[in-house]
Length: 271
Image (cartoon, rainbow, N blue to C red):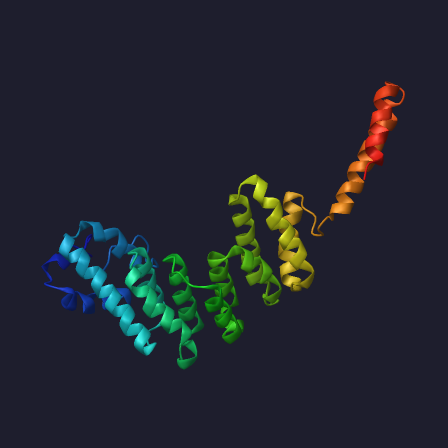
């Protein structure tokens, strides 16, 4: 088995490289895989740096051409499509964004297309930071809710986190999907500055009563883990708790410092 891709430098152009690349992505060409079950695109991305600049450009072009061919027909085994699109995102091929976006809008025209391939398309758009509006993701959700709800939510979240938080009640009652989305929300919240996390948590708390049982369970476990109540605390409740705390402190100070106790009492009575 060859330990590099240097033999590709002998090919003259992308047209010669494309058939080899397709076979390689289908698992029909020897590649330096780290494990027998490693997807082909890993070896291709690792070995790309060994190639001449012209060959690297031909590899990029050939990958883009294979993506174009896929979106025209929708044909390809899910494993091949997954490896092809992972390679395209690993190569940062912005040229495939528009074809994939148009293809995603036409998923209904390809009834034979496996759900795994549809999810791979959407994942690639997200990884390539495609500039897609909120309506694009909502339209996909309404057309392919049962198949693509999780992927669509990830895209909506990448597009507009606030819209994604409002969209939580639409998530199906499927536990693995709910667990994945809850983890995504948790990681997003943890990356925020501390002063912004509270607003996100309150939006999640507000949406939670309308959410599926699976999502309530998943988010409830996250909240329990970090000590957050699943029920939002109103401003009146927070004020009442604060006043009760002041009254308690006032009663404790009564025997120690009457003057300070009088000040605390006035504070507890303040609106």
